[in-house]
Length: 302
Image (cartoon, rainbow, N blue to C red; front, side, top):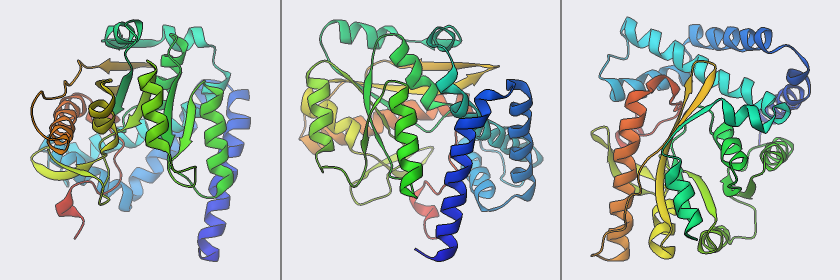
């Protein structure tokens, strides 16, 4: 790691540490306004991340990436993204009752009914809205769960993020640098009737499963569909978005494992099923889809 990158990482880590310490002590509306101001500053600069967001949203919406309508949408998208960060700093100080009361959920019965029957659940989510708040809601209604977290740098920031999520009631496994048995641990949790929540719309590694997404090829993680195939757990797509000052979660119907085919074919079919549902959810709430990275395979060479 270069000295410049190391300094940058330390600055980011210090900012997050200050956020978790200071933001809950200050009035909510003024701090929310500060985060909107920061979002607008980043948006006006139209740097690499904002241009990538606009390119991704152009594929989702059909709006030209340079159109005025796209600039308005990307501004809303950056405000949504920065709202996520503002809220994670406040979540640890919020009462569970308030989180549950302000969360408007469609399809909660898909989780409740499966867990009540002793069947595990794999919740698969795109990077939308406030997924940490959605996790806090899930814990608040009686379903503590296991998830996997990307290993951020520096290590101090990763530890703070893990502590934050564990404080909300999640079990957090590191994506890398752990005991190397994440899949086995996740499988064990759902075989015992538990819940697992995993991000599921981007994995451009060799292990990703290729799908058609908004008319072009991309790769999604194999983990969620493979867990369903291997364990018999219910695979439930979920989309997360903002509803005014509150939050919305749509837990979609189970994507069933095909009766016929090889394991690889079944996993591929489930992965495509997830992509199809995510298309619908993202199309309904494009401003809350926080995809500021390359996603489609054809974009990797640009």
